[in-house]
Every structure is written in structure tokens, then in C-alpha cells.
Length: 275
Image 1 (cartoon, rainbow, N blue to C red):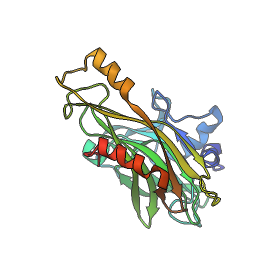
Image 2: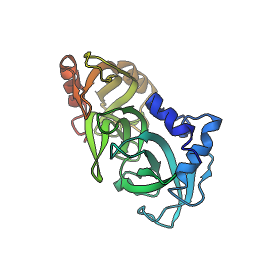
Image 3: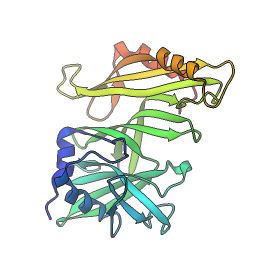
Image 4: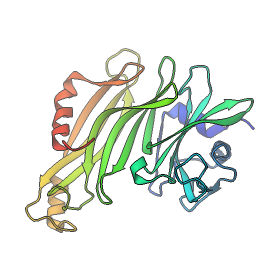
């Protein structure tokens, strides 16, 4: 079977967002390629109610080996992630891992002799959306990740993810916290979310950089409640500021643009406990 449309479409577009139902965006003709990739993760992947492929039983390489899944695909991207001379695909999966291990992980596949083979698995990587950046030797993924601090509060990270030998390295660009309308966390109402992002050459060096817009606030709450009173929640969301940041890509990683350094620090000061 040919490599298929899905992964090459992702490489060309450089992005994949997870939809409201949790399923990767796709067209009908992409399904065979997605299934082919997933067959390297488990023997009989099936579409579930989220309209994406999942393993019904946790694969042996996960923490919950042989237990009931699902182990669900949330992102697929193709490129040269660990070796410049290899055709590879990265699958980010959710499920089959405890919260302490991120609730999922990253599967690296490599094309060998006209078939996909699993090369590695790393727990703790479950992005909700990614952009792909081409490097001189390998692609770098710029991802939005959500990590549950409690069952109601999430840390929202904008991170660069790349393979180094057999390991994955994460470079933190920005960390925020969103309490999802709950006022019982650290006596504050936290707002932290990505509004949008774009790839563009911002410094004229011929490499794509990152233009990022986020909404952030950390408003004190006099009387913590559950949930927040409607008027406080409305006021908190209205008071959240929108920030524009720029990060420059050098082919291996990112650095904050000089004009965005103060904004990056201001956001970090709002969320000092973000990892």
C-alpha cells in the first residue's frame, strides 16, 4: 500500500488541530493512510465514537498493557523526526497511561521495506494541536499541550518537541494555567488559552517563525466558590488580556524575539507555578 494521503497532507500543511469531538481533522480519502499507520500500533484499530482510530486494548508497550483501552489517535504527522535519511511518522495517542505519565504518549514509526514499523514510544506527550517546522536534518514539532494539575485545572503549554537520538526533548516557550471557570484553585480565577498561531518568516532569514496570540489572566477571588459566580466568571473572562508574541526558529529550536521578551515574562509572572 502507498504511504497514503494523510501524512503527506499534514507535512505540506504543517499543522493538525484536534476538533471539538477530539478527532483529527481529515478528509474521507485520508482514512486508509491513518488506518495503515495505526496497524503498526495495534492489530485491529477501529474507528470509535470520536470518529478517529483507536485500539480497543492497550498495547503491550504502554503502562496499562493488555487492559481495556481506548488508545486513541489525536495527531499524525510525517517527516524526518529522528533521522535525516528516514521516512517517519509521529502519532500522538491518548489513553493507556495514568495521569502521572501524561495520560498518553508519542509513537514513532519508520518506513522500512514498504511497511511502517514502530521504533519507539514515549509516555507523557499528548498535544492537542501541532505545527511542523522543517529543520536542516529533521522536523521539529511546535505543539500545544494540556497537563491536568487537578481534575479541574489545566496547565497549557506551548512547547517545541524534537527527537534527539532515542529520546524526545521538550523546549518550553510559554506556560499558562486555565481553571475552566473554577474559583477554588489558589484563590484565583485563571484564564490561559491560545487564541491563534501562524507560521511566518519574521526575521527575513528564510526560516518559518512563530506568531502567537494568547489570552491570559490570574484574577484574585475574595470568596472562592464552586463554580465561580456568573458575574465574577463573566468579569474575569472580560478582564483577560490578549497578548501577541513572536518566537524565532533557527532550524533546531526557538527563541523569543526581543520585542516579545517583556510580554513573555509578564505572562510567566501571572502563572509562577506553571511548570
